[in-house]
Every structure is written in C-alpha cells, then in structure tokens.
Length: 119
Image (cartoon, rainbow, N blue to C red; front, side, top):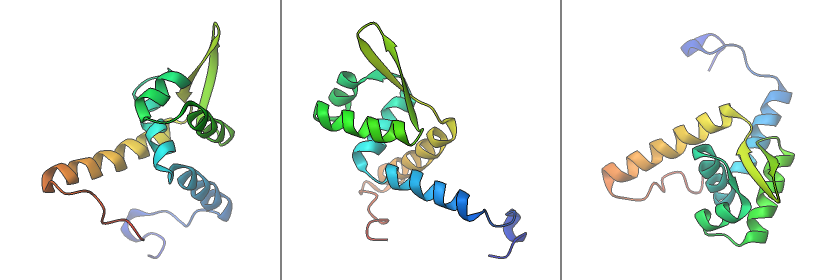
C-alpha cells in the first residue's frame, strides 16, 4: 500500500520493523502469550503463573526470563518472592485485541480460531 493511502504514515524504519518482529516472535509461543495475557490481568509470582497457565515452574521461569530480557515484563521483590508484571502497555493492548477478537470469533462460530495456522 502506498504511503498516505488508507490513512497510514510513511513506512517504519528497518530498526522499528526488526523490533516489532522480535516482540511478535516472543509472543508466537502459546506459553509466553498466555503468560503475558495472565499478567495483563494483574501481577503474579512465578508459582501463581505456573498454576494459571498450566506450565512447569522451571519452564514458566525460563519464559519470564526471555520476556524480561525483551523488556516486555518486569519484576520486583516482595519479601522472598519475585512479583512479575507487564512493562509495556502497548503490548498488552495488542495481546488483548488479538486474543479477544479470536476468542469472540470462536465463540460466534463455536469453532476454533485456526484460520491463521500455517501462515
């Protein structure tokens, strides 16, 4: 689409596209996406996240480390435990939009939102 068409500004820089691709790449994992979804609802420690997303504690901890390194999640110490929270409100907006739309579509059609698989 040409710049200016459809209300879009000029194309983003290669650096911005690379950063966006990295963020989407991290969220391409269902486990990490579920973790971000859960943290978008409220902060949690790793034990609570593991219970909520149905993952093993070490695996959830590794996912959190990757999300922290990417700057999508942060943590703070509360006594002896680390409490995690989403550090990027824009990522929360995107995750809520995409997951919410797919959930609504699946509920309307009573079929899984699998149209995007294999793209």
